[in-house]
Image (cartoon, rainbow, N blue to C red):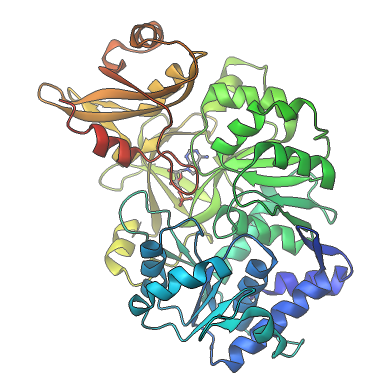
Length: 514
Ligand code: AMP
C-alpha cells in the first residue's frame, strides 16, 4: 500500500476535522489532502516521476507535511533534511540523494543559491513564500495542479523516505525506508505505543518533522489526528507546556533532553497536562535520575521507544505499565532498560562472529522485521556491513534479562577498554547524575599509556561540586576500575541538531589528555 493513502483515507473519513494548526492558521483534512494532491499533480507536470527523489529543506509547518505526502502519493521518495544543518551538509545530502526537486523555506533560498554548483541533479527549487530569480513559488506551483489525484500504485519495497542518519559517526547515510517499512511502523505504533489511541488525538510536534516527529506524524495522520505545530523554531519548554494545556494535546514525541527541560520548567506545576495520554521519548538514553523526576512530574503518560533511522522508531519499547515509581527490585531495575521487543519485531544479541548470545551476555543488538530498511542509498559497502545474514546490525551494545528486557549499554564505539576491561560509560553516567549539582554528564575514554584508555567524565554542573565528591560517589557504587581518572567541568555539553550529546566532539577535544 502507498503510505500516502493514510492521508487520502483520513480526508475521506474526517474531511472537516482540523488536520494542522500552525500559528493562527488551521487546515482541515480536506484542505490538507487537496493541497497534497495539487502538489502531486504539479510535480508530475514538472516532470517528477515515481522513483525520483524530492528533498524537503523546510521548517516545521503545513507545507512540509503537504510536500511529503505529495511525494508519497506520486510514488516519489521524500528526502526530509534537518533545517538546522550547515549549507555544506545539506548540499551534500541533496547531491548524494540525487534529488530532482528541492522544497525549501524562504530562509534557505540564499544559502541554497550559494551551493547550487554542488547539486547537479536538481531541476527545480520550490520556495515557500518567496519567488526569487529562477525559484518557483510554492503557492503558485501548487495552484497549477488539479485537486484530485489517484495515489500511485507502488510496490511494497519501493522507497518512500530517504532518511539521512544524524551522522554522529562521519558522513550521513541515506537509509532507504520503503512503503512497507513505514506501514509496519504505523501498525506497530497502533499495537504498542499509546494507550487508547483513537480518532480524537491531538499531537504536538516539538521535534523536527524531518526526523522523529515526521515519522511520528504518520500514525497520527492515519487516525485523522489534529497536528499542532508551534511557530517557534527552537524548543521553548514553557511554550510547549502551555500548548499542551491550550490545545488539549493527547500525544507527542520528544528527545530525552527535551523531557529534562520540560520537567525542570516551573510552568510544569502551573499547566493542566491532564489530556496528555502518551509522551513518547527516545532517540538517546535517558538517565534514571531524570526518568524518575519525569515520572513524578508527568504521571503515567511516559513510553520509551528505542529505534534508529534504519528501523524507524521501532525496535523495543518501555511501556506505560513499566514506568513505575514503586515496585519490586526487578521492576525498578527495568527502568534503566529500553524495554521489550515491539510486537512484530525480532531482537537478538550477537557476538563478533554473528552467533546468538544467551540471556545476560552482552553483545551487539541486531533486529529483523518488516521495519528494517532496504539498505543505504548508493552505499553497497555500508549496506553489506549493516545488513548481514538477514539481520540489521544496530551498532548498539546491550543484553537481555530473563524477562526479555533489553539493557542498552552504549554505541559499540563508545565502549571504553581500560586495562582489558570493557567499560560502558552509561553505568558511570548513571552514578554521576545522582549528585544534586550535576546537570549533565558524558563519560568517554581518552588514550592512556598504561591502561590503553582511561575514563574521563565531562560534567556540566549547576552548583558547587568538586572532582573528589564525584569520585567518592563512584567509589560507593561501582567497581573501583570504573571511576573516572579525569573530571572536566564545562558549561554545556556539545549536542547535535537532535539534542544528542556528541561524544565524538568530546573525544576530539580531550583525546590528547594523556
Ligand atoms: P538515529 O538513527 O539518529 O535515530 O539514532 C539511533 C540511535 O540512537 C540508536 O542506535 C541508539 O544508539 C540511540 N537510541 C535510540 N533510542 C534510544 C533509547 N531509547 N535509549 C538509548 N539510546 C537510544
